[in-house]
Amino acid sequence: MSVEARITAALGSFGDPVEKSLLYAAAADLPPRYYTFACSSQGEDWADDEPGFELWQVNVHFFAPLDGNYTRRVRQTKLALHQAGFTWPRCYDASDQEGQHFVFECEIAEEVDPDGQTERGGRF
Image 1 (cartoon, rainbow, N blue to C red):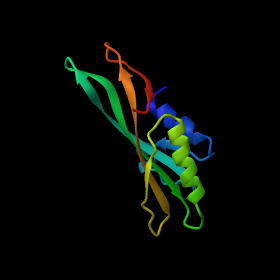
Image 2 (spheres, helix red, strand yellow):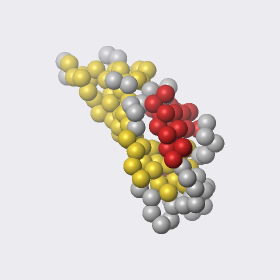
Image 3 (cartoon, rainbow, N blue to C red):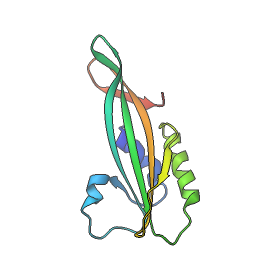
Image 4 (cartoon, rainbow, N blue to C red):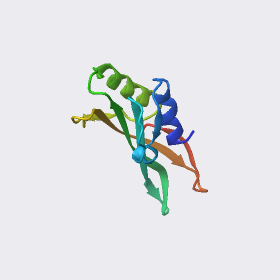
């Protein structure tokens, strides 16, 4: 399962949309609550000029209206990502006068086979 599919599966159970950040960047009519995410990766554990695994850095954003307490959702989001194989997320509050915005940062590693294909991901 790809990193993006893991994120979507982990967070989709909450019932709010989960999309790549780029897809919502230009949206004019956003839902009241939603998740976006962005991923980047780099090779790690190098041997013979090839990486042993691909390390993915993941940023997940949860947006919600100002009039709500989302402390429980923040905890549930951390747990859902962790149970999907990501490291325990660091979370910070980036809310402003337009709405609540929580940012979750975590990582996941995927082994790389000799042909350069990534395999099953997991915490490292």
